Amino acid sequence: MFWDTHMHCNFSGDSDAPPESMVEGAIRKKLPGICFTDHLDYDYPKDPGLFLLDLPTYEREIVQLKSRYAAQLPILHGIELGLQPQLAARHRQLLQEYRFDFVIASSHVVHGKDPYFSDYYDGKQEDAAYLEYFTSILENIRAFQDFDVYGHLDYVVRYGPNQNKFYTYEKFQDILDTILRELILLGKGIELNTAGYKHGLGQPNPCGAILKRYRELGGEILTIGADAHKPEHIAYSFDQAGELLKSCGFSYYTVFHARKPEFLKL
Image (cartoon, rainbow, N blue to C red; front, side):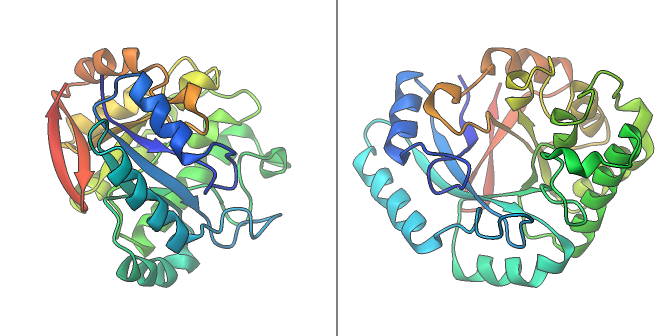
């Protein structure tokens, strides 16, 4: 079983799970370790306070959990930053003030709208909506680089009108390859996010073709996370992750400690 290095608890605005319940869930599933990566999304539309993470309390709680469960489960302290170009300076300042083991960069808000909601797609062809999402990732990478991996690169297809029915890596190859090359040049990784299976895609985020292409281009940093918001979703579909990664050319996956990558054999 793998480390699950993308999970949320009630410090995130979209989870009600006490942190202890997530730890106990991971112990029951016999995971080798976990990393909490609760949401921080400044300038979030509709509800600006929804994802404003209480950073001092969050840090204190994770430190206490590390100590309390030290003999049972390694616990790491991470964060998932919702990137938007205008937030770059604010994020840089944040990461000078707080020390995390792991920083996931994600695109949740695209030019003022979250693709989670249907109004993101209003007046757009589905392919155009997806292309706008990928373009926003490039904008974010070029504005801010102090992260470890970019999360769920094709998150947008979870919520599109047809999800991934007509979506392929090849259809968006030019911009996806540009994203992957820029991440590799910066020494950044991507994640295999198994929540795509939970959302009925039949594949993770990003899809296997993107994972394979990242490896073909020389990418090596690859983390694994279920994006769980409740204990029962910890390590969701992890049984499929290992074989998929091997088929894409990976021999190792990555866990970050104090922002330093450790490569673990699949």
